[in-house]
Length: 91
Image 1 (cartoon, rainbow, N blue to C red):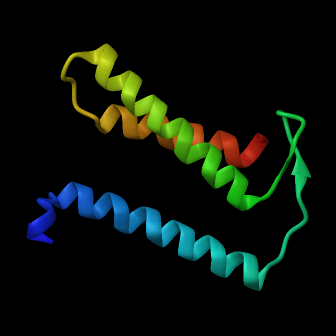
Image 2: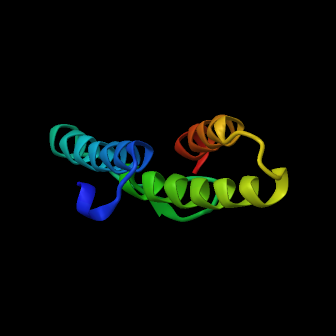
């Protein structure tokens, strides 16, 4: 991976994303689900909620970087986990 100049955090990030997608694929095969309507009033499946939580987490991290002026990203991770939990619970 040296030819791409990847850092360890970048590798971990993409491995986690790939693992989430793979895991959700296996769960969908083993336990099929019907879409449900949540707070947004649209039908969503587990995969839709994963996409919404990942997209929202990207924006949370960008806002964290822009608003906190160098404070550690661990706080953003906590906010993202709370956000993802809320998305999977109510969306």
